[in-house]
Amino acid sequence: MIIVFLIIYIGFILNQLNSINKQLHKRLSENTRQPLNVVLFNKTIIKLASNINHCLKLEEKRRLDSINEQKQFKELISNISHDLRTPLTSVKGYQQLLQKSDLDKEQLHNLQIAQKSTDELGNLIEHFFEYSYLITSNIKPNLEKINISNLIVECVLSYIGVLEKKI
Image 1 (cartoon, rainbow, N blue to C red):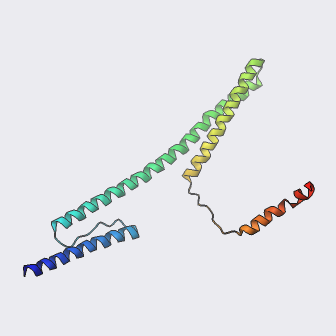
Image 2 (image 1 turned 135 degrees about the vertical axis):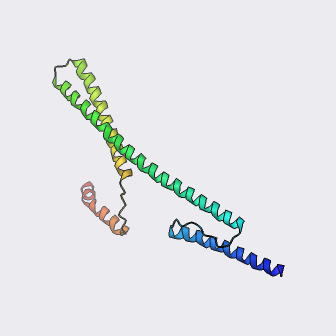
Image 3 (image 1 turned 135 degrees about the horizontal axis):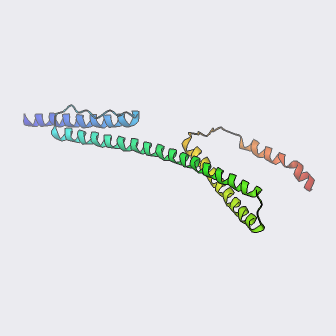
């Protein structure tokens, strides 16, 4: 009698473990956030399911925190690129005013060096702005099939005029 009871109890435990496995698989495949449910009143299995649910909640919280941090980082980069443009525009304006005034040769040389550095900084800020735009926008590439043979033939044919002139 005890052996039959133990076999039935082991069957229930295996059934419950199988149910937990199916619930985990369903959670992964359907991307749901449903916690694990346990039917059998076994303290060990209940504690196991509780710990798994706790781990799943922590993982979800960390994932959401990561998404929020990424969003804040992208906004920060976008704000920085905008904030850098304003004072740079002001500096360029003052340089243009100085250029129109009477400057001696050395002052004009120094102004040209400053303008060159300002232009380089402007280019860097522009690249930074483009980068911030690319990471904040959700641009999806438009993939399409092409016939590479036709593309190569078109490229070669476009240079026939140049080749004929060279020959």
